[in-house]
Structure formats: C-alpha cells, structure tokens
Image 1: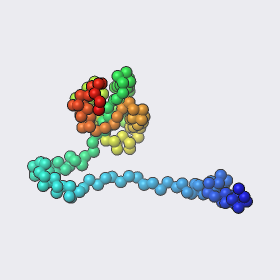
Image 2: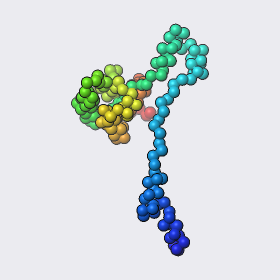
Image 3: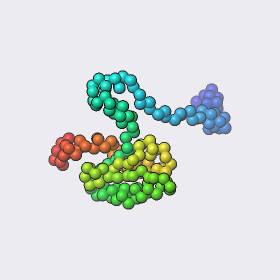
Image 4: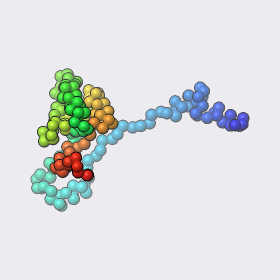
Length: 176
C-alpha cells in the first residue's frame, strides 16, 4: 500500500478515528417506518364470492366480516415424548399463570388447550400474533414462543393446519 491509499483510508467512512465515528453515526440514522395495517378491502374478491354463492345473500356481509378478523395465536408442542411432557408442564404451570397475572385490573385473554388435539399438545390464545408482539405485558410470552420455536420444541401454526396430520394417522413405519 502506498501513500495514495493511505490518504483514502484517512477520509474513508470506515475509519475508526473521530471523523469516521461522526460520519457513521449520521449514516446509521434509523429510517424504518412502522408497518401499516393491512387494508382488507377488495371489491373484485367480494364480487367473485358473491357470484360463486358461498353463502346466502343476507349472510354475505357477516361472511366478509369474519374473513377480515385476525386469527388467534396457536401453537403445538412437538418433539419427543419426554421433552413434550416437560414443555407441557412449563406451559401449564408457568406460562398460563404468568399471562393471567400480567396486567392487573383487566380481563385476561385465556390460554387453553385445543380440545380435539391429543394430550393437550396444542394451545390457543385469545390473542392475535400482533397483540402478543405489541403489548409489553406479553413480553415473556413472546420471548417464550420465539425461543421454543427456534429450538424446535413448538410449532406456531394455524389451528386448521393441525388437522391433516391427525386425520392422516402417520405411524412410525410410514414414509411421508
């Protein structure tokens, strides 16, 4: 490296001197904007389903209204039987109690096992994913869900997506 390159490094924004630090601070201004809520309006969508006749004309507004509602957050406990039982104990003994005691003076959303899923290994909350992320009161719940999903011990999925594996009745000797 010659002197010419030396001059370049002195003025370069990756320089670790005072000039570089000042320019880095200016360069890293957070310009992110919050997510906008999804607009759930589509005239062509409505026209199509009116033509198809998925429901009676007088029930159509209720049908569309139902489609616009957020789904509740759900998860199922996965993994080996031993790990699943330990995690089920944590959910029943700590997670539910923590959420119930989280915000004083307000009615708490219930967390309950999905009744048709075997061994209490699937749970539903009267919260949406958005509620869990945005509300400070559910910080521990949010972190629990993230860490256990990353560990592979729970799977966050919609309730309706839990049905096919049960109906399929996969056995250990099957290849899926």
